Image (cartoon, rainbow, N blue to C red; front, top):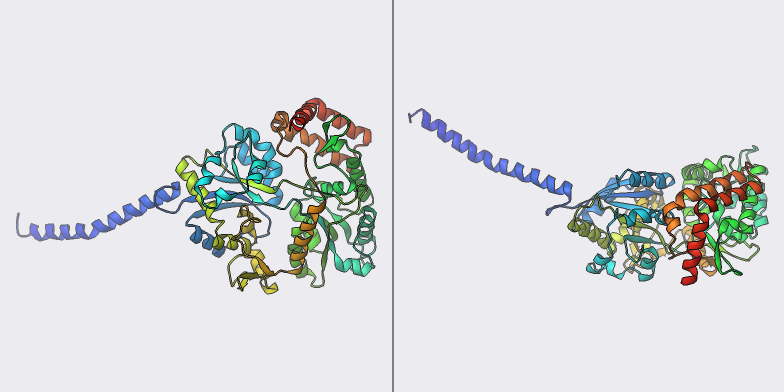
Length: 507
């Protein structure tokens, strides 16, 4: 080798020695990204979730980063507005494009049992004992969620019934009205809110009740409770069988009440197609004064309404005297379940990583982040209790409110801190929710199985749903409605009645 070649070779060797560590580092980075995106290796597991959003804004990036840091995960959450959530979830289910974790409302979960039985979701029951928090989940609530005795989901805990009436208190005061305590008094409040200028602007621009396209969580089912309608199913005292709610006289009374409001222009004319977001908007902008649904909505409605009108004030009613006294329908003690897709979660190891995330969310630091937000930004801590200052309300709602839906088993979680001084309306809502427990009406089919209902319940329910709306809108008379009930029976409803009755009597 010539003298001229040696320096060149040396320089080349030195250059390679300098570059080699960088090449190895880049290779390591690339390998790490591959592991991260697949959820494997030592990197943070990636967890994709589809969840409903009950607030105008999804949680802030800062709040989400805090959640990821505490749980050691990378979260990719598809926040879907609650009003369209069921449709989006059903689309994902039918197109086999579910996220790793999907939230299913309890009203939708009943119709997902065929997918569960066909192997679309992981059975998680055998794994719960491995986790310090999950192994203490309420056995009774887990039993309510079981399919063929097996557990597939982690439940979001809820009181039996949060249903009640949210009313503009300042409008009551302007018109010299008291809070209603009977169905007729409620009608009178709704009528005067429509006809007697409760906002004192000299215009005929308000209406009493605003409702949405939801016979369950909208106004209809709660009004039905007041009239004495069974909760989905009633018992036939003479024959010992079960009878669907829409065959009761109280169901017809409820339809007639709603039809009266519609015919007299006391409710939004397009209530049958109104979304939850539009329903809330009517209340927030001061166009409607009565909202029937979850009393937990009151604080947020008040906060947002006061941005338009600082004088807007709200109050709650949970006791309406009906023909059978005080009654309110109830749900099982879970609002919904997080289910785990077998297509998206390929291995047991990955499933365990995701269950470990949910177990971690029940620890105090994460659980309180999900419920209240970040300390000193969204709430304060004093003597071990949470303070919720009014000046933090808007920031907490905007930046952290949506996180609450990620909580599992929160009501019985001892790691969740108590609130020392709650906002008045929130405290009132919780007090009335507790009062509802004294007169709840359970669904007698909870925990029972009907093969026909599981297979065809959705399509059959549409017959009754359409008939109910068409009756209230004046497109069907009473005979026409009951012809639709007979069609429901002929197309499978009679089998549902028979199967539920057999299961009920056997139980």
